[in-house]
Image 1 (cartoon, helix red, strand yellow):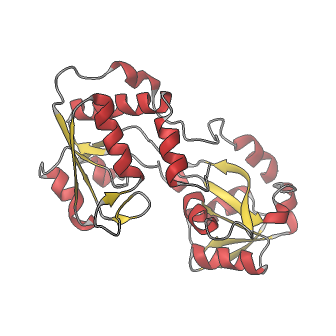
Image 2 (cartoon, rainbow, N blue to C red):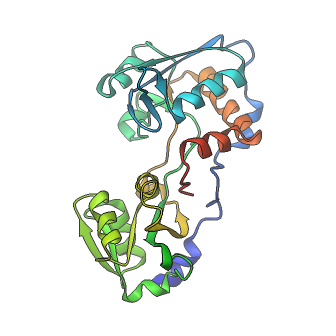
Length: 263
């Protein structure tokens, strides 16, 4: 029964490339209310925002911020802050928007507003390369699946696949290495982190089956944070995200920064 429920629970929007922007946002660009966007970020979250060997800020989020400004046709600045200071800097009007993966928690929601999601974070199975083609959920019934102990992905397995034997590890890396050595049959966890590991292990393993999006378990995904009530900036960002999705720019950035796609 659990396998059947999980099969029907596969969301319709799970796709090869990210497509999350709200099309209704295309009509809400505030005219002449956004002369510039001052983006804040952090310098230590590759491949989203980090410094290269020359000290320059680069990454998916950095390119996205610049594309947003170009789409809205406004001046753009990007300033890096330490993670533990970035949110307060935004609240103190040191910038107009924070692009650094700040979680949409109730506490943060009291201080900030958020753009639409530009990158959701699904859970995915990883198996040995020779097991990908024949992968199926019913086929997991007699398999051992590695998870990070106490993770939301372990909760997902317990809820939807209780018949499957879970093998808990202290970290995603330990769980993936167990798959590589053959001590488990599959891994289930955060697809983005697994994609980073697969960059160096494609001869061994790969994603198998569908991507599973569960915002209540895995988080809402990545958004851009703005001070509460700053609707002109938020609307401009949402408008730009729709345009960037429609013209293929978001796909281009995704493929550039995530050569092993996790959707």
